[in-house]
Image (cartoon, rainbow, N blue to C red; front, side, top):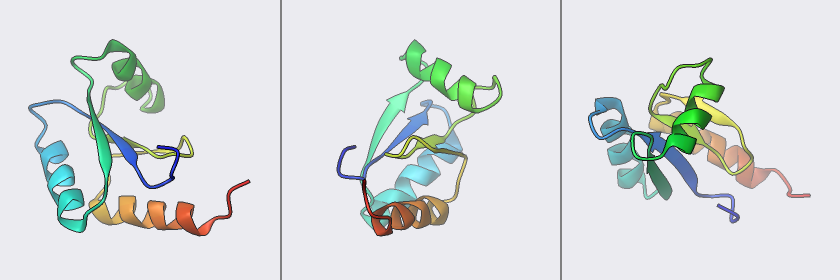
Length: 89
């Protein structure tokens, strides 16, 4: 994630919204790392923390630490564009 272009998508294998988001990002050539929260308790805890105690997926973690919950691909792409346009300190 240090290059500022890769997001982490927290998912579950049965989540249709997760599959849709991954497919749309793949179609746009947007790189991501996928983490299955059912196989990673620490990831599940992080997702619950940022979603008011709920393990809502997909939750997207950006390189700057911000998150979006169940976003459309367009919101992920727009947020990445904002990050790339912002000078790094």
